[in-house]
Length: 135
Image (cartoon, rainbow, N blue to C red):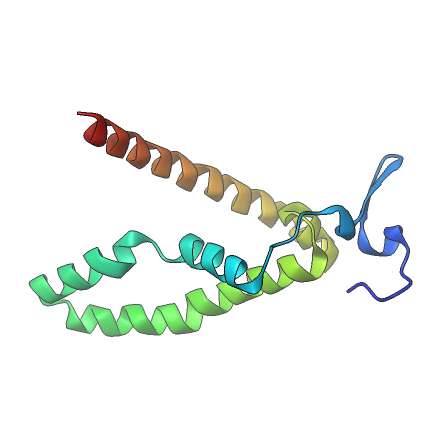
């Protein structure tokens, strides 16, 4: 965590002869903007309208209890951890995991790969949506 009077090396990552400081990184305009982006990132459209509809239609009440428990005790703490660690280190996934514990740096590559796979899936869905609206 940066304190007043800290040098750029205290808050940044040294890349060769260049130093990237946390103050050079883009910042959110407001807390509301940050909150809306997080909500858009975390809440998929399926969680809002399709999942409850399917549970109600096909009798998934027991599964809904397990879903809500895992949401509260697994997904939410991991999401909070990811947000807080990103805020604390002001680095990408590899830099964050390296600062926490160097052998964990390889875990960051798994996270990056998962984001790539998920974005590939979403791009296909967006492509179908564009084709639907154009026709």
